[in-house]
Length: 180
Image 1 (tube, rainbow, N blue to C red):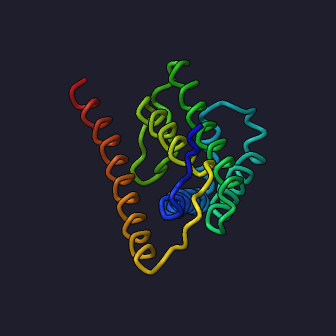
Image 2 (image 1 turned 30 degrees about the horizontal axis):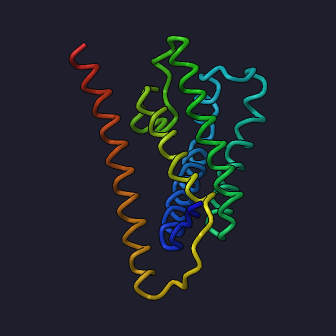
């Protein structure tokens, strides 16, 4: 049997990128908490009276996932991140199936709101696959100064790739509205 072991540099890059994603998501939700509650309510996944309890729980879970990934508790952080991302993908997919395509995705509420789409479901499932790599064993290898530089550039590259993907999704939605 061939054992698969993750390079520690790759694990560090993925953990840092996902920690950054969840920390920025939590900050985004806190920056306009009322709008976040409105988005959460619009999904109609929970009773409207439970939104007041669910909103801080979602934020706390995102902060916890970011913290676990940041401090090196990768398996627990990855499991929580996967649960959150899969939950978000499931909520979007369920509303798409219901025909409720005009819901604000909650990715940008207030600033450059976007609607839910199958692209967001795929994005979240892709992120699940990426973070799932953190559940693999990590090969024993000491990281050096060059690895630190590579990690910085790797995190920056993945962050730019994520932002570019977000822009493509938004532009596709805008273009679809123009031609319809």
